[in-house]
Length: 136
Image (cartoon, rainbow, N blue to C red; front, top):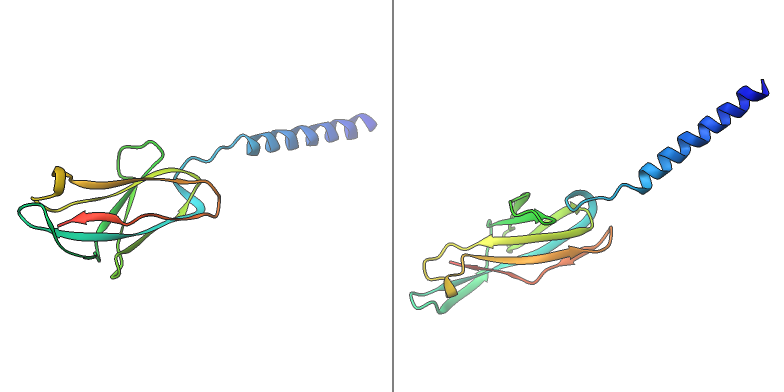
């Protein structure tokens, strides 16, 4: 009887150890499922045929893209609000790339997108980015 109780205790401790080590070794990758947020705005510039900025405003209903970690493809996207604001919520700690794609024939320096690298360092962090620039 004593041997049975002892083996049950040893088995329980072993299971607890496996569960604890399993949770401790889990490293979360960048992406969704967390509590962090990336917020920003998109500022648009109208450019003339010479590439000079002639007008500007915050742009509504524009797609903003995000890639998680070192990915080079689109992992998610969102649209800007009527005030030009966007947010990617429920993110894990890690590195992200956000960008907008321009829609202009006269973009300065033949630039076709504005890209920004963002790092989330804390579990519940909200990162406010600089304005992304959109040429039209």
